[in-house]
Image 1 (cartoon, helix red, strand yellow):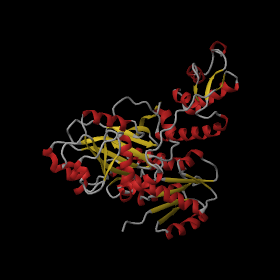
Image 2: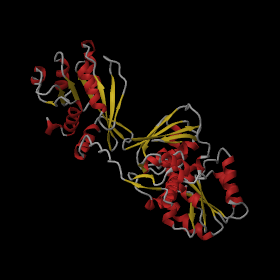
Image 3: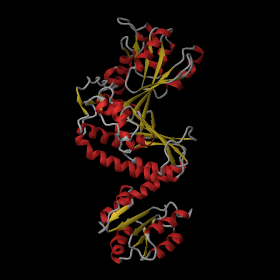
Length: 484
């Protein structure tokens, strides 16, 4: 049984201790108390508490000095300090390290649990070679602080809805970021507004030049401040899909513009959508939005007729099909918050294989991989949404490698066979032995080859389009009995 966590309450008001101590002890915590900052420092150095709740009115040693001394001692540098006081401290409140008095017991207990969850995650990050999960479970601000405390170096990739973002860390410092067309601080601040998405941290010494110099706490606080300001401006802003253009000639616009406003004017040389305009600007989203609003207010810019929006690609699987596939895949491979399935691909000549790869590449969420012809390997990865991914893996056609088909195909949810097919050994292995659903992709009007016609069920003709054949296979893999 792990030892009980220790909490130090530093507060000159005994009523605070009488309010908090019984409830904390009831939850299994050891509680120590101190009425001034000097005594609190002694207890912290002697007892090494897991958390300090420090009131800003504590005499003899102020909160700033107390925290600075803790951070200079290697044995106490990671002890979280939750400050309390009767005023407001927006910056620390944003970081989850401030509570306003009078204290509410339920709020204190919730904050204590949050800080301990963050500490547990920090220890897990320090011990793990890599890390993956979902931002819905651990906020990005907490994740970055954990990586910073553990002085990790590497790349943090965040993916949601087909969009990818990347944060580069060097010894715990954020040194670069990218999100769409945005880079450096702008990209990081935009990413801080995301509360969902799969993340993967890959350790390693990152190459390249550092484009971000600020301390992490400053970056987070500034990013959250800008997000709040941008949220207040958003009702006055045109929608991201609304087109804007200059309302006057460039010569009628004052020459002494603010640099950000001048950049917005330059990017409006041709009409464009608001979202694209803000993307193109090197300035932050907030600064670019303010500049655009100023140009609209002064009549230098105006709304334009929106260009027709490109139709969004239809989802490959319907929601119920995706749910059924997730259930099927969960019996095979899973990685953290992801559910990863496997589809084996075989058969086909050079032309049919090339056509199939082109069809896969057109699917939303498909990421091709380089594979040498004739070898085992992953042709590509298809992200289907909601954390479900399918790897398309090629089986070699060399008969000498046939004994490897059984272990290689283990855990597959289905097989996609490209026509033409030589011999029936592989097909018999797929259908009879591995007992996976098989979809054949061939020319329109083609009949199933004899080895497939003779196989005991589990085979369907998916037509000439490889993407549609894959869709049929995945939908059938999720509801195998009904589809085959």
